[in-house]
Image (cartoon, rainbow, N blue to C red):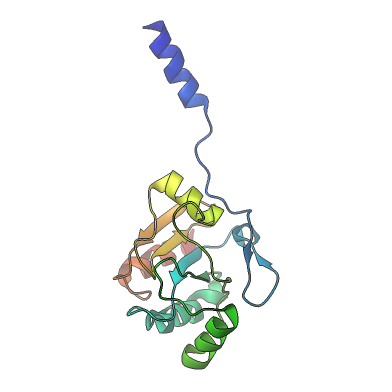
Length: 173
């Protein structure tokens, strides 16, 4: 019994898995993007792809950003070819998004979001919450304090009530 109690006490003393907000993403515009740079602000992180049936959600991501950016929301697009629906280069992705959607949201370079090569943010997300993108346009809302405030799959549109209510709650805190 003492052994079980000691083991339990040891497990309680271990730090909880933390969402990686320090490892940078490479920016599609050059330089680096760190979630930690937006500490104190909600950040919606979305794995995207240019040749996907959900690609029109870029319009909703931009509209969401336009609606809430002055209040502190950041929307981060993470292009990924993990589902084999991304263009072949960052230059093509950037041009596609600017020409077809007029995007000015922050965007990373083409990044792995699942599996052994997943970016540390996504690896820590999977470890902390069990959430791994199942397809393109999965959404993760990171609260201003760094905790995961919500996750949504591809079918949930950026301007859905589920997402906007959670963002409104975080912005009111």
